[in-house]
Length: 135
Image (cartoon, rainbow, N blue to C red):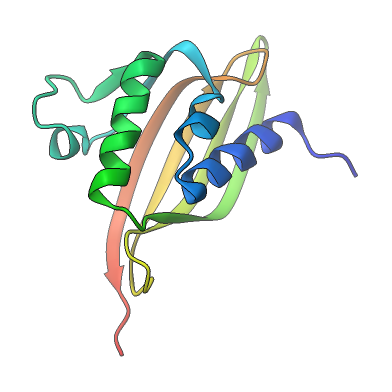
């Protein structure tokens, strides 16, 4: 069975994150894409808004994350896709592991708004609770 093009785009996005490959991540976005992240001010204190816009700002945002969390990994938990006229929406549930030992993690969801070419034009990130495994 052939994968849905949106699934392929999301898989590439996940692989880019786990490889810390900014180019691979950014190739999934339109030139004027926006990412809304409620933690942007923690990551980029000089930022006035809670979003980044355009590939250049997205690259800076990703560089900051990978600098602050050099071992960050994400693990997908579920993907929901809704086709729409002129594009699609996709919701990815995933776990964020900031360290190599993977004893602490945060659950998160991201809602992607994709254009007709399956490029991300908008992204909203929602964070759940953080967890630490007990030894």
